Structures are given as C-alpha cells and as structure tokens.
Image (cartoon, rainbow, N blue to C red; front, side, top):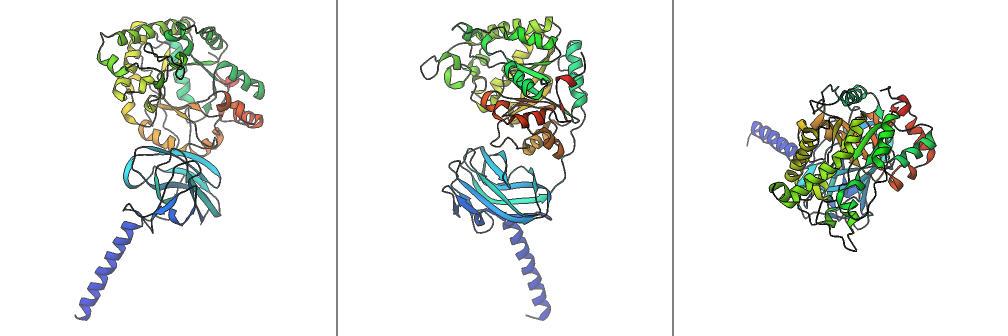
Length: 470
C-alpha cells in the first residue's frame, strides 16, 4: 500500500471512530455529559449492562423505593441549564424525584423500552462543585446518564385575547376572563381551596386570596341519599363573590349509582374508582341506560346550585372532572374517550339546556393530549401538582404545557401542595395565571407562617385587595 493509500485509510478510520463515539456518547454543545454509573449508589441500585444502548460503562438500575438513588457530582460554571436524564422506562410511564444541590423537583418519564432523553428541566447551577440526585417517585426505571446544556430563562407566554368558549357568556364572565388574560404573563393571582383555609391565609398574611374555590362534593345526590349535608357551601360562595372574591367551583362527584359501600370502600369515597362499579364507558355508549340517565339527573341537580351564582351575577371558574387521566376517579377509569364524551355532555347540559352562561371552563391536564376535550370546550388549562419538594419551580411541567397551549389557552396551577414559590417561578419564566393550594397538611398550614406571608405579599402575586372592582 502506497503513502497516499495509507493517508486515505487513516482518514476513513478517524471518521468511523468519530461516528462511533458520537453514537455511544452523545455530546451536548458547550454542556456536560455525566455517566450515572460513576455516581454514588444507594438503596439497592446497581450498575447493569444487560440492556443494550447505554453510554459509558453501563447504567443504573434497581430503583424500587424512595431510598433508591444515584448521586452524581461535577464541576460547572454558574448559570441556568437544561437538564435531561438519559433514561429507560420499559414498564410504562413513571414518575421520578430529583434534586440539584438539594433543591428538589419531580417529573415524569414517558414509556420507552430503549434509552432516550427526558424532557428538559430548567435548573440553576453554582460555580464549582454541584450534585444531582435522582430516585424515588414511582420507581422502576433505569438511569444511564445526565446531560446539561446552558439555557436562558423561558420566554414569557404569548398574550391571549380569546373570547369565552360559551358564545352566550354573561358580561360578568367575559369581564373576568378578560381580566385573567390581561394579567397572564405579568403577575399571578393567589387562590385557596376552601373558605376556612382562605381565612387562615388572611389571618397570617393580613390579606385574603384573590380566588376561593368551593367543592360541590356534598351536593352529589348519592351522598345526600346517605345523609350528607352541604351546609350552605354554595350560599357561602355567593357571599364571597358579592364581597369581591373570584369564585371557583370544583366537584368531587360521588358516582351517581353502583357505590360499593363496604367497610373498606364506604359510600363517602364514591368519587374514587375503587369505591364504585359504575361504568362510565358503558353509560356513555348507551344513552338509554340507567347509568346515562343517572349522569343526566346528577348534572341537573348540580345545575340548580350553580344557578344560584348565576342569578347573583357571579362568574365562576368551573373545574369539573379533574385529574381524569390518573384513573383514580371513576370519570377517568375507562380511558380518554368516555371522559371526553362526559365532559362535552356536561358542557351541553349546563350551557345549552340549563343556560348557565356564567361559567369559565377549566380543564385539568394530566400531561396526555389524548384526554383533552378540545379547544371548543375549554377556556383555561390547569394542572394539579404535588411535588416531593414544594420549592420545585415546575419548569418541566410548564414547558410541556406551553408546547401544546401557548397562545391558545392560559395555564393555571389548579392544585398545589402547600404554596408555590411564585416569585422564583417568575424569575425563570414560569407564569401561571393563578395558583390554588390544597388544604390541611397539603396546604398553607403545613408551611412556616413567615413563608406563607412572604409569598402572598410578594409583588408578583395578586391578592383580593389588589383585584379591580367589579
């Protein structure tokens, strides 16, 4: 072989080597690629090589509990970074918990039988030594590596000036929706689930949340049949609206029939899938069935309560059939199609039959587009989040939702564990239209009073005293 041939062969081998290296070790431009198997393993996890497609010397497997973790340490420049886990989730969608330098966040891994990159989460690194830990959550996933690339704050959401989905919406509902659109991407309205919890917030902060949400759970006919008493919840909501609060309504709807009513699954748990044999799929497929008629009857009953707010000219953030894609509530127990049919049926029944035009329709998104009822039936898209660390800025959740809804629908934090760090969220580009903490040990009472006051009084948070007069 002559000299020229040697040079050509050498060049070809170099190219092959580079391509091979790129295939097994992805490089993020100006970023970092950190192999998980080089980290500190805990809680029974171990390095494995049994599934092909990993980078480096192997991957970490055996995430079976909260204590099953891997921690990687590395040096970096200070700044914002997009973090992606290279993972495998062969047995379906899995939730995970993670932290960067002790600041926690949670996320979801989409199903994948091969290794792939997760959706990016925006994180802040410090100059010098940093650490990332992942583990816990639902478990039963594999971690191959961590990729970090420099990032900028998320762009503000696009302005929205869409009319209500109900073309006959009341002037009050139109005015409220227009106001929510005007503050979107510029500030975030405060809220609270249940009046007693809102009064607690007022006590410790000196100001009432802008939004107070009431649950119509006790108005469910199958609960009233068993002795439940609503205790004037709707009348109190009317009072809140007249006093200047924005009113929200949700409904833990006890199944209209076929409650288990056993020692383990009593009648008052009837909104859970496990506490009823009611088949929403059968009912929606058979409009002449007792189940379908029971659905209509329950909706007609609840419309009487909503009408009390309509008569008082009070608009309502109406969030029914929440968390459907989780499957733990009967309205989501049999897949997306029966749920979508039920949502649209409810819309038609309340709007077109009972002429309730004071409703702003809030859909609770679980991350799967297959469950979305359609733009024609949704005014605002909300999400319910219970992160392992309340300081989670939810950048991954926000990005996932804005990828689908930016410029189309406003996004709201419809439920949250304790009170979110709204100002820090704003600083990285997360701009929920409003937030609603949950109750009890999942609400503001489980936080230090000084932190509750700090958040509700921060400049980017709108409380009742900052609402425009209606």
